[in-house]
Every structure is written in structure tokens, then in C-alpha cells.
Length: 439
Image (cartoon, rainbow, N blue to C red; front, side, top):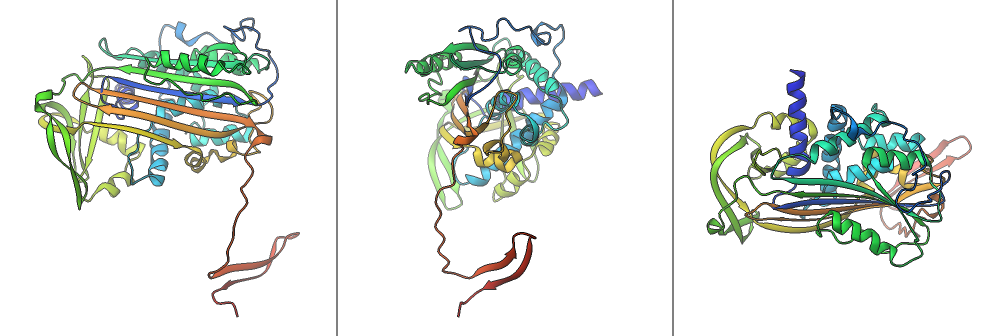
């Protein structure tokens, strides 16, 4: 029973992580971590391996006979995915949204290896990793990489990581080594003063996403000392492609009072299907074995708000268990979306605000560092063949002294207000009131 449950969780993770958000031939994600500041300990001396002389602290996960990701880490990734989506939805509910939680999670997991103290606790809360050891997190991510890279004989999926170091900067060896051992990160030394260095990094990203993401680093600023980059590449056609001859224009209802004509793909077949009072849902598989799928959920009319309020990891797992094989007809719009968002606010709301402040503690990678920005960009196109998608996540870390200072504010007290008189030494509030009409 336990093994059956684990297999279900594993299969759902594969489908969920790289199926739900995607649909034409290629699915790609690139996550970049930019680390800036003065770091201490082991010096980066070699352009191909910054720590070639350092001993491996543990056996490389890929050499183990069995590969088993911890179900707690899989569950944590799922919870983080839906929490992150929910936060993004709150701020952008009236526009198209398309994110890659896997891209963000991998970038932050690599960064998490450098966090300490309350900053590590805050990141663990945001990433749903409380109670899971760093070794379990890293080992499970390594195991997931191996599992995900072998989803189907006719499906390609690769996950690549790299560290790009300023040749004049020192780093803590354990932080670098963990990223090499568990994330198989390629470590390369660069002269960050050379304007061509950003091109070298972007070339690696371009190659590891098969040309679908050609740039993640615009320019290298003087204070930057390290970039951690993640790239994910997926290529797979639908198990049963849509017939292009069946594609035609039909009305698409943007709102109850607004519609447009749009190209829609149509197909009849046997699908895993679920319907209840909230929605209809179908699983559209990729490849020969269908281990990865696109899940499409269609809320019932006038029920979108309730659906998204119920869209969380617990309900997701319940829904996944309720799909059953059924013959039916699917009409799905072709679409192409470009999306970008800065995730600072969303991640702060998830509990890791300290990592963006002067109180940040990344002492496991170096001294006086903080995250200044987490940017996320995606692209997706769905058509008759499958899905083409790309995502890039950039986590920028700066010296705590460089954390942005608050902008000058404007406060025009021209409406009813609250006020109080407080003794700051004792904290006693001596007077308070609501002023509706000053006289």
C-alpha cells in the first residue's frame, strides 16, 4: 500500500512538475542565481573545477544503485508550487499567468545551501522544507533529477546546473561542493571585468535549453561574484497529436460580456478525465508511455474564483486520485504567452522576507549577503504537436550594505486618520484617537 502510494506520488510529481504548465514539443526552464559580495574560504583557482582539490564529503548520489527521492521533499515541492502560484495569482489575477515552480525551486534550493540561522529557517518555511535535513533535500533533488531525466523513450528531459565564479573571489568550499555533488553543477572561472563573460554564461544557457532561452544575464555588475544557473529542457509530442485539419476558429469567452474568435484544436479519444461540481479536467499525455501529461482544468461557468480558492496541494492530490479513463471530445485553444514577474513580494509573503533584508544570513556561502531580487520569465506555446515552453529565474544576491534603501515617501494627511501618543522608552501608549474632521 505504501509503495503504491509512493508510486502515485512519484508519477503525479512527474506529471505535475513538467506537464501541467506545458503542451507543445519543448518544455524548458532556466533558473539563474546571481551571487554578489565578498565571500570567504576556499579560493576558486581552476576554470573548469573550482574545488578540484577538495575531497568529496559524500558519495555522489548518481553512483548509488537505487534512486529514491524522499516523499517529504516531493510533497514540499508540491506545496511550494501551489503556494507560489497562489501568491502570483493574487497580484495578477486578471492577466495570463505562466510560471515554472520547478525552475524557481531548483534555483532557491541551490541558494538554500548557503543560508544559515533564521534566514535558513525563513527559506525553509517558504519552500515548505521545515523538518527536512539539508542532506535529505539535496539527496532527493539529485534523485529527482535522475528520475525526471528518464521519463519516456520518446521524451527528452534534461536538467543542467552551473556555477560561474569571478576568478578573483573566494568561496566556502562546502557550499560549492554540495552544489557540485548533488546538483551536478559545472563550475567555471571567469573574469567578470571582461565584457564577454556574460556572453559565455548565456551561451551555456542557450545550449542547455536547445536555443529556446538565449539570455539570462544582461550584464555583470561590479559587485557580482557568482552566478548559479539552472536549465531544464523537455521535448515531447502528444501521445496522440491533434489533427491540424480539425483546427478552426471558434468563440472564446474572455468574460461573460466579452468574446473573440480563436483557433481551437479538436480531438476525440480515450483520456483520463475528471468532472465535479467545480470543474471539468482532462489529462493529455506526452510520448509513448504517457508518464508526463498536460492537465487542463476548466472551471464551471461563474465558478473560477471558487476554483482558484480551492487550488492547493491537498486538493490537487485528491483530484489526481479521482481521474479515470473515459472516451470524450476535447477542444483546446492554441496559444502563445510571454510572461514575466519579480517574485520578491510573493516570496516575502510566503515567509522568506528576511532573505531580502539587511538581516539576511548567508554565512554558509560567505559574509554579509542578501537576496536583492528574484526575477522570473516564461514563454509557452501550445499547438497540435505538443508544447514549447521556456522559463528563466534569476536570484540576485548582493552585500547586505547594498540592499536597496527605502524610497522617500509622500504622506498627504487629507482624510480621516488615526493617531496615538506613545512613550517609546516603556512602549506605553498614552493617547490614541481617530480624527475624522479636524477642528
